[in-house]
Length: 194
Image 1 (cartoon, rainbow, N blue to C red):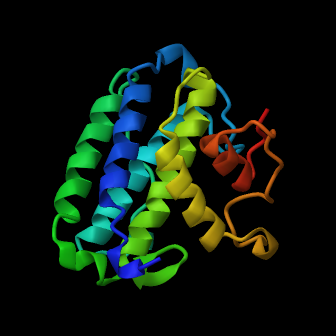
Image 2: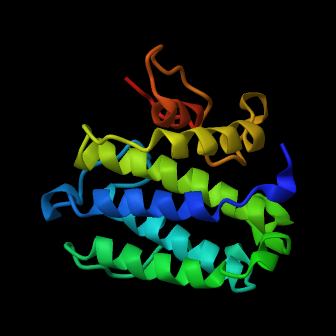
Image 3: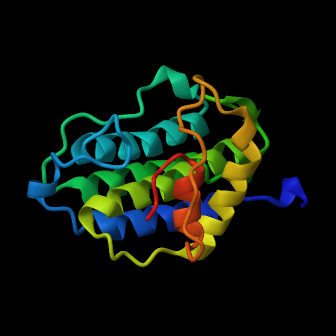
């Protein structure tokens, strides 16, 4: 693979659009429910996920990701899709310049070219969309092409044999034989998939 040709921006925006469609289905009664991410109920996971979009936008603006929290402040119960829309617009503007794909980007897992930093956030957006769907709409039909790309990133950057306490994902779990790429990604990142 020619890594200099890797441009995760179109897939990242598709992933955010997929997430936005799901957020339109969130109801206030779901916000306190647990999610596959043990540390988060749905409200906290939504805040973390939208905050992650702001965080990678901040990186595209020239900042260091760890200088900002991957969370958002107060968001109204029915305003999650709008909050994501604002974060998405910021990310689009922050990463519009092609040159940023090759500039060093400081993210939690190191300093690397922007294209690979953004690829990591693609993986996160697709994974958290699966997490959110388990609470909001388990019947969600996912964009499996997006998941294939995110799974490739996950397998390369988070190999099963190097998981330790510093990695914010549990050990790889088995996925059912008929699992699609989105479910395989969730299992690779430590989620229990049925």
